[in-house]
Image 1: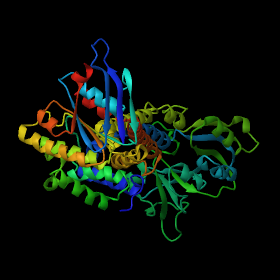
Image 2: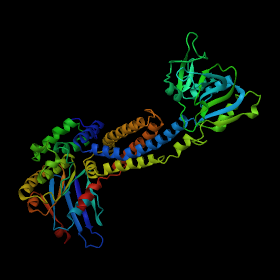
Image 3: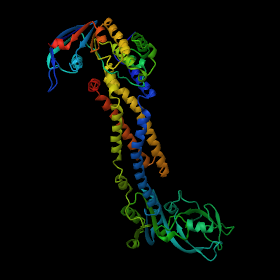
Image 4: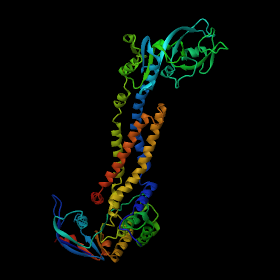
Length: 370
Length: 201
């Protein structure tokens, strides 16, 4: 029989496999403990990150990060529209009042004021794309008149956006404009879209992350030189406060250091999992098992339950992330994955260290004390 | 292979000497019985021979001894692993692949009367079977020095006899075997006896 001088790595793999399949590793128990301990930490972090993300989304949705520069007939529509291309700007568009009104056939006694806007304003108001030709109306008006995007609404006198052959206007989009503390400027009117090559009364800018000073400096570039001193910049909705720094909120979340608990918890689990097999390891060393290979075997066995536990925790993180509607691989998921990954590293380090520090003498100490 | 104890003496703090001025010579191919009443230092002397404890007096000289195997008073194994696995491991650690190791382990198990039990888990063994398994595993390591501590302690007479029978067969192997015991049946399986009380005197 040809012999090598020591145990082969194939033998190490085979020993690990037999220990896992026979239950010596107690993989399911350690994986379950890993899932509970690390899962709690990871989910707490996802919840904390999710809370920040929810606050940020709400801040954005209520228009608190939308800034409006007002100066009658002193805003250059094209410059304002082009601000939409600046980094961090989610949308920009100009608006001006008109003396026209629109009378829907369904409500002949309630004329609706018409304002003119550049196409970019639709993006500021939360529409996914710049709208096609037609009118933009707020949700409250659309609901009361039964208007839908892409539909036509009968009107009484001839009005802009109406087709020549019929007394109808096309509805290009419906925007959300609830009574949530925002200025009522666009709450009850119809927006007719016009090209930007003209002067307007205001420039609307949605900026993320919100920065009032930066927004003001950007908006003022849209002013024509005339009357520039009279211009005012205000927040569309000030009910959520002027300042909101999502990065800072994320950095200061209460669970920001929970990955350390995950790391230490994983390390503890890994250490205990190997320590409970101290005699077996010492016995193997006494049988001639080389220490480095024994460490390899234990890492393989540890890797089995660590990977199982990590997959379970990751599934919980992804599930919570989807529950928050943050997207599968959003910041919450990435943040949440940091905890199980650190815990996994900690667990493997614990397994390695506990195996590395096991001495053959442990066997003799044990029997001497018995 | 040779081992000598030269003027060995040992004691623990605040206790009388377990033994002193103990000298002996051990040669391969023989089973030595280390005898004496409880507390006379039999297990301690085994630990000194193994190199785990430094003697307070004297020294141990070894020639040609690289591998030492120890069989403890109580059998220890991995409950969910088979008898065959327990004996195969030392053989694999000496470089055999699993198939070869299992063949060789099966032969060893037959010699130790465990052929029928080879596929059973360690947790399913009786005390005597466990002790014989420990002897087979120790032999599989191919040590030059085999130290056995009270192999029949806690076993009934019939089971102890089966262990002693295997102990006696160890003298055919090329190794030094030292057995600490106060079981007369075990003593009779030994080629020579070292009486700690007598030697100390």
